[in-house]
Length: 67
Length: 274
Image (cartoon, rainbow over all chains, first blue to last red):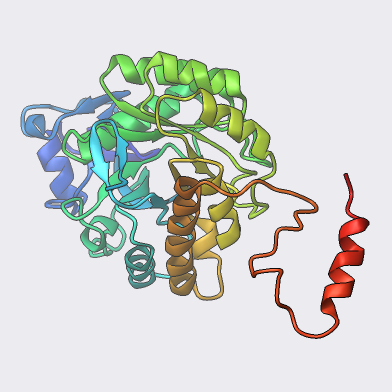
């Protein structure tokens, strides 16, 4: 069991997952998003390689209306 | 052709608009279209997790292929948050590096924290971002931001969202006179005449959001702002006449006026102030 903090909310997963699996889990596949892990950008090209581990802090962002 | 050039890219519109505070994406799109803006600001926010997966996305309504998106750091109160936000934005927008930096100092006024802004600008420029920077209307700070390598300085006309108009045209004038990079008024415009005044001062452009979004008819106001910015720019280029309290220089010929008017004009001429 691992715990990740995603956009400030803790979530448990049965086993370590990679970023592509996380994106699918969050139903964000194909959406225009960007992800930061522990303060560092994860390039989209590395989503399938990067394995998330217990305690990781993730920020998943989109573009919204703003001035 | 009189174009706006920012970081080597040419734009025909000198009006930049935000995309916040509209009632829905249809209104956002219609207002942006009516404004004629080519550069539009967007904010970067946490996505909803697990709820409403089919929520429409702003970038589907205003595609990056059609507009130059200017991601901002609105809501950031520290340089760390601002820098991280723009790194995320660059990843989100496939390496797009033109950004709007603002680091706020106070939630009540949304006045910029220039100490943090200067530090953030330095980091971002080192990382090859092209930084358009929201700033106080301090001419020295504006020059420092330019010297540091920002691609445009964007002083406030008055507080963000206030609609109070151009409160210190003289500071803006000094900033414009000193600058070799584009100066855009960002924040404080309330109505069309404010935008015109900014452009008549010699600003290279105006960035606004609330003045359009909070109008009773945002789409009509967007159109008004487009014309106001164009009118102000043309008036600036045309060069205004000098102000004279007593000109006594009528536009129509003074001779040949019928009947007794001649007597009055002669009397008035003898009273003319020195």
